[in-house]
Image (cartoon, rainbow, N blue to C red; front, top):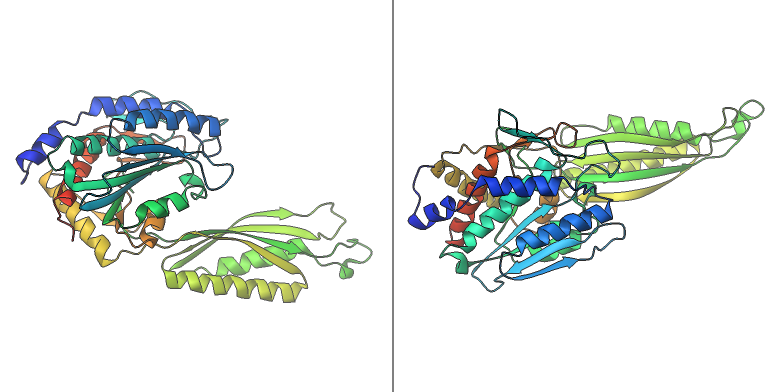
Length: 393
């Protein structure tokens, strides 16, 4: 560490140790917490509640707003303090209980460790906790209040936790979310696109494929036409991915039913509005051409997250903290989505990649760079202390 650190800041940073953080991460990641594994999520939630209980304030495990999701940890500390912040993370992973990737490996000679959810984001949860513990031991702790939300369903779009996150975001000066860095070098995500998942159900008409095919209305062909039209709608600012098609039956029957599943990622709110029009136009045209009825289900679950002036000021604060820690800080737009999208939609500036350096997330090659536990905990601690001191208007 170097740079212009106060005595209070230096003392807080010196209290952080990587070893206990790594032990936490390994323990949490060795329990399967796939988004639909409620038993595993409950087990991890219990461990997280125990770990975060060292912080003051009121803690609860909150039931989800949607069935089929796990409980969410919610902690409120000093709600009357002059500076109010939100910190979020998720306990779930993309790895189901029957997935082959279940255990954490050993730290290799390069200081890298692999495991399910070890970077995304058990490592980030350990970073968050270490930073908050350091802040609580600081003389500046009284100046900052915060809410912590650790949700159980981020990997499936946060259907059961979005209302809790929205409530926690109210009145906050800034938010930090502990997704892993975009790249192993620590690059942060700035702007993010929005994301919507949709299913178009096509109702045609069955007929004999040999005797009277002209009397049928092929739902599978109509769904394929819709997929092609949507794929051709891709342009700068809008990505459309036809992902899966279901339907059909015996080879000698004109299919009367089909479902097209697709994902849409608009870069801005204007792109989202344009996407809605594009989808509606394509459905109307395909319905007319193929004489079928199409019912659309789904929604934009993650709004676009623009890189506005308030967010840029928060990034600049973090960049200055990095400079004083001899840590290079850079950011660029990311293609993925997360709870940071929803927090930004509440009008709160957010940095959503405050977690560890690592890579290959959502795959059996997922890894964490161990030294980044300390780096990112130092960075968060310093940023929190300076936010407490009023550096962000």
